[in-house]
Structure formats: structure tokens, C-alpha cells
Image (tube, rainbow, N blue to C red; front, top):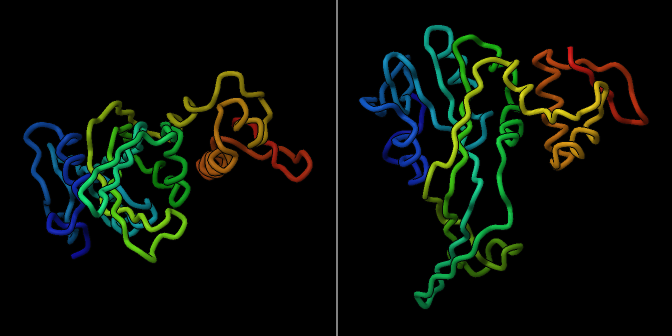
Length: 223
């Protein structure tokens, strides 16, 4: 059996699956040799708080005979909480704000799964707390502060993508008909890396085609 069971799941995962599952759902259900987070009226619900690439084998096994909703949490608001050795708790808001487009950073590991008629993706924009504790000699970039856990505060927004074409709604309206990833990044206010991941996913799903190059950059057009 392969899955995240209730004994070793994180508080964030445990709370989120209860927030997004419909009333009356059954939790931690074995289906086809895998433990599924929730089942409601024949719909399998999986909350993926780690890399989507880790789900490829499980999805390949479940999708042929089951409808699956894969929930990807994205922190739109994150609080950084440090528990000092003397008992003080320091809390501040992270300057980073997540967006729905961050689904491309996960979908890049297995973009063609979205073309399967039995799969839908749900992005849950959440408010969460990242807990940090001090461990001397570790996490030198954060001066010894290591992430010890995450917990959910609220689900702020939910957005579902049931077919590849739904992803096109994430492209900015003023994007040129022929564009590079730099054009996309500038028009949408995205990091270039995320725009590149979006282009890869859209190309793999045959939603855009490469029609040339501008310098070293591919030029894309909607198919």
C-alpha cells in the first residue's frame, strides 16, 4: 500500500483535506491499493502538499477507473512564526503572496495528466503559518531557523480546472498573439521561471505552439 496515512500526515494536510472535502465524505479510504484522502459520491479527493511529481504513479493507477480531484494549496498569505528557546514567539507576515498561476510550478512535473477526463485540479489559495524553531548549525541561510511545521488558518479561495482549456483563463488579456515567456512574465507580473513553466505545460497540452524564435527565446501562439 502506498500513500500518506493519517498517522504521519502534517497538520496542514489534515486540516485542509477536511476543509475541501464535501459534507459526508469518508476519509483515509483504501482504493486500488492506495489510501485516498477523502471519498465523496465516487469522487476521490487528494490533497497534495508536496511535489506533484510524487503523485504520478498513484494517479496513473487511480485515473482509469475513478474520478479524481487533486487539490493544490497555494499560500496567498503566510505568517512566519519563530519559537525562541526562551519561550518567546515572534510572528511576521511573509512578503511573498501566492497566486493561482503557481499551479504551473507543480503541473510542470506531469502536465498531461490534466488531459485525462477523470482528473480535475483545484487550487486552494490559503492563509497559513510556517512554524520555525532554532537548531544551531542547521539551515545556515536562515541562520539556524528550520521549518518545523505548517498549519492552516483559512481557505481564502478555491478554483477548479477540469480540462486543459481552462488554463487559458490564466493568461493575461493583453498578451500579444505571438509571445515569449518574457512577454508573459511582464504582462502578468510573474517571475520569468514561472512563465517558462506555464509555457512548458501549455505546450505539452497542445494549447500553444512554437512558431519561431526571438533571439534564444521561443515564440508561442495559441493553437
